[in-house]
Each structure stands twice: as C-alpha cells, then as structure tokens.
Image 1 (cartoon, rainbow, N blue to C red):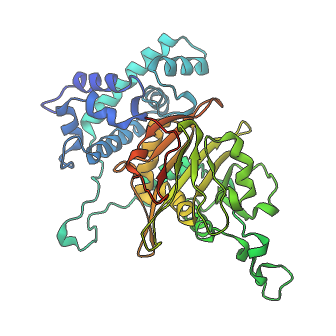
Image 2 (image 1 turned 180 degrees about the vertical axis):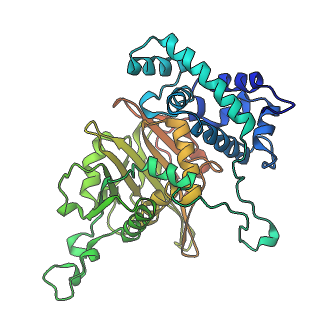
Image 3 (image 1 turned 90 degrees about the horizontal axis):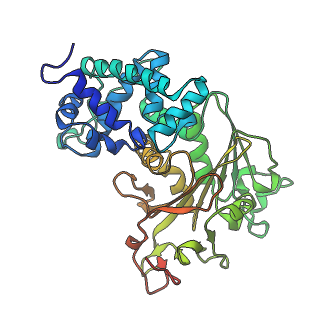
Length: 416
C-alpha cells in the first residue's frame, strides 16, 4: 500500500540519487537526495526541525529497518549500492557495483539490473513500513528523565550498541588485548612490586581510569569477547583481533613502537610538565592542554588513532597530553548513543581508512566531558589509505585559541 500523496517511482528516484557518490556513508546526503515530501513521509511526524541531526538520524533508522526487511540476496545489493558493506566500500557507485560483480563472478550490468529490482522492493517497503520508533524526547517537565524511551526487544540490541560493536570489532569470540601505560620504576609505590607483602598488580598502571572504563564498556557491549590487560613491559604479540594501547608514548613503550607510522608525536618534557602534541606536516602545529591562571586544568587533548594491520589486527591508540585526554579519547567513541553518533560522523568522513582524531576533553566537577562530534566537529581529523601519508580531512584547530603564556595552542611556522 502506498501513500496517497507519494508514488513508488518518486521514492525510488530519491533512492537512486542517494546511492550515488558515498551513499549512506555520508548520512547527510539524505537531506539533498530525498525530496521534502518523501522525507516528511518517512519521518512520520517524529522530527521537530527539518534539516536537523534528528531528521538525519530518523531517516537513517527508517532506511536501515526497511533494508533489514529485504530478502538476503536483495539486501546485499542494496547495502552495496548504499555503501554499507566494508568489503565493497568505495567512493563511487560504479566502483561498488564492479566490486560486487567480481565477487559474484558476473557482469557489472547484471549487478545493476538486480540492484534496480531490489530498489523497487525497498521503495514499496518504505511506503508501507515507517513504524520505526522515534528518538526519545525530553521536555522541561521530565526533570531529566526520558519517559518514552524505546527499549529493544528481548534478545535484540539497540542500534547504537551495534554501531559501537562494529567500530571496536567486538564480534562474538573476539580476542582483545589492552596494553596500559606503566608508571616509571622510580615512581612506583612499594606495593607495586611482586615481592611486597601487599602486592597490587594494578598499582603499576598509569591510566587506570581508562583501563577500567574500557574493560567495563567492552564487557557490557560484548560479554563473549576475551579481554586481557597488560603493562608494556609484560606484553608480547599474541595475534589478538584487537589491540588497544592506552596512554601516550612517555609511559607506554608499546605506543612508541607505532610512532614511525603516525603523523604526530608528543614532545617530551620533564616529569611534571605537559608533553604537547606536534603535527609536523601541518607546519609544526603544536597543541597542548589549557590551564587557568591558577594552574587549574581547563582542557586536554584527546588523541584517538585507528590503524589496521595487514595481518587483520585492528589497533586503537588512545593518547593525550595528560591522563584526562587519554580517558577522553576512550569516552569519545564509546559512550552509548553519543559515542555511536560520533562514530557515524568519523565513518562518514573517512570510511574504513586509518585515521587520527583530535578533540577537546574537559573535566567539570570531576566528570570527564567530551563533545558529540556531530554537534561540535573535532579539532583535527587526519586519514590515510593503503599506507599512504596521512592528510587532513578536517582542520578546526583555529578554535583552540592562542595562549601567549605558552599553553593551549602554539604555531611554529603554521599557515592556513
């Protein structure tokens, strides 16, 4: 059954425009490829402002729900067309179709013909099934409690959980190794030594807050994954599926091993001083924490890096100038719905490429606060493909204001 004011052809025309270019790898394309009547019908009255993030999220949810309703064979064609399959992720529709044709051992025109039929089916589903739950709303009278939040059915996971698991590679049975920074030997408490009568193994870990946060979130999201933690001095390659390196190079030897591959470094300073972030290819752009005149920390830099090794291991490097930035880099892309939105933002920009993300992390009243990247874009986002040099995809470093006292941001020959 179709809407009295919309035809299948009108919906399908929008879907054809949507599949061009990066497709749903750039969700905001929905606003320009679907006509306003189609968007309004699919939103089903659940969007308060046209062109908003709320509308984009709603439309993506409706589309994904309809795609899931397709038969397996048709679903594959549609997912490839819309750039939702990692193995066929390319910036143009033609490249995606040719990639699928190689997999199916058929002509590209055969893929196009079958994809067109699948889009017909999808258009009918969209006109007949738009019952995706709206995003929960909060009104001033709710006193901070969301009263109409929709819970997933038993045995199902919420969409944001799926996004987090996919990004962090938390598939069933995955092996995850966490290598946490280590306090230097001359700074260790006595009970961090195995021979001490009150020995505490975790007393030697420097970024303990981040380690506990990661272990907790991973266990919540994927109870079947195997998680092990190590100090750099006790870690040897175990061919894990995922390697998470916590804490920057000064106190993490494992992080230092990856520095030759990275477009940045932390400038070493004596203990008790900041180790600012330096990006040589951006004219020596140097970023550091921001402080009040009373030497109270305002902001640190969260530096998140993803590398994919040829052997299949995904490496996440969580760094910062201080421990606040390290924790912020973990929370930025792991915090429930907000983390999932930020992941979708990053994926829209870089796809499955290696990347470096730099954004602000704040501590307010003892609470670590990291922005939603869909609301406040990162300071920097650098990416590379096929081990080519990293290039800047996003550069908002100007907003991290100059500080004549030498804190915050310093530019060494940096030009825009």
